[in-house]
Length: 116
Image (tube, rainbow, N blue to C red; front, top):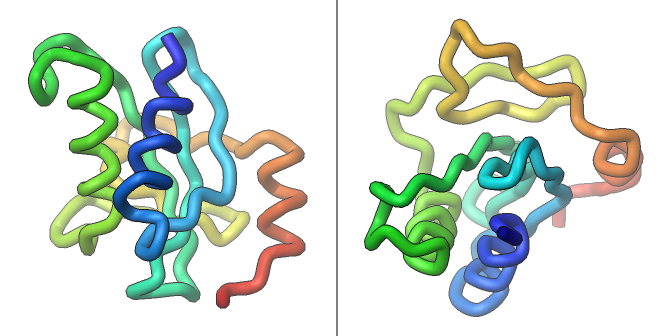
């Protein structure tokens, strides 16, 4: 299952003007961590843990990816959020779950990336 690939394709297809994916990495066969920036708040780097299950959306990975892409483009609203030491604001990660330390290639990109 290429969950990240499906999500990236949906972002590129429908939300490329609103969402810029800065990096991602798999955390098991059906879970991916995504770090991204949105044009509505370009100074903020957001991160999410996205876990597919067959009860989400229409039960397909494609439907899940479409829903995730829409959610990434929208404001975070009242979702739980907390920043990490790298400046990523993690959205929807429960307080009892450890936020990740992004892989070196994502950290390097964040260090070199400037909001547009």
